[in-house]
Length: 257
Picture 1: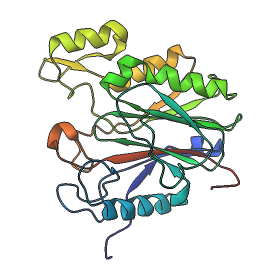
Picture 2: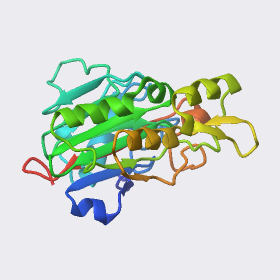
Picture 3: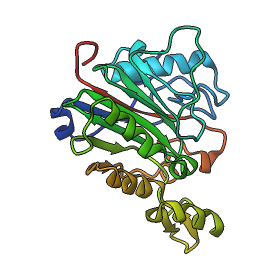
């Protein structure tokens, strides 16, 4: 189609050596037209479904993944977790969850975001991976401890879990009303923030990192990309009508790379 291949950003090689893989897309290398240009991976934002299918296939293949072995979610800013051992059956409605967990190596779990924090988790020894969509409501609801808890139920050890937080809006940009900041900080104090202009803000990624720490997960890295500041990434707060990035986690195994 004449487009360059999708742009993806993976975690440092040290994580890959463990058998865990984390990657996030930017907005380039796809076929979607404005305002979703170019690599929109979200299927519920008003984009042409055919373009989204092409974009998802391109992004998966750029990562060496089989597009048929990527699990997507119908994200609703809650804390429900689904345990999966394969893609959703054809024709079945994708359940409304904000986290997925699998014990199947090679199965990729995907999170869609455009400012929220994608949370990618893996215990390579147990062969358990998890992914969560953590916006401000999900952070407060407890999606992060919920996904870690489900991973532990499947045999993961929090001390072995490696985690990566993908591109998201930073605390210096995520301005909110004072009352909203207070409500979030009452549940997750570490999310309290102030914008560069001195107004109330929430740092969702900082809150996620703190919740992971309280759950026993110590190996956490965080993307330095602020989606609102980066023209290479989709941002709902900047554009309102826009596409969605995807962040992926998978473990090496017989059904993948």
